[in-house]
Image (cartoon, rainbow, N blue to C red; front, side, top):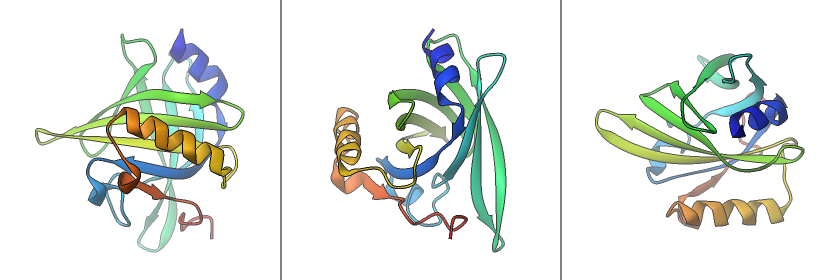
Length: 155
């Protein structure tokens, strides 16, 4: 049911606002998990299709990635830089969504939280909410990077 609700509400245009991780080098500039969302589309099978913008050889490229629904309610998996389990941590579909990603690559687990907004610059109250969600996962302010005005494809 949660994934169905997620699918219905999440479709549309989104902007990357902030990310947090327990392995900062993976979300810092040129990090392999630093991606910029463009849109999310719900799929008929209950999965999600994320459209990311990446800078590749100086050109912005749209990269679609399918997140396949699992048996667990509200969870999907995606293969990118390892195996990833994606959960919706918190949302108001009209304004923001926070996703929690667990990445497993070469026996090492990395967690990443991503705050997406319907507009590119959310108010400070949403950034505070994101900090609280991060804290639930053991991540402090030192683990958070702002992506506002950092997407090279929006400049």
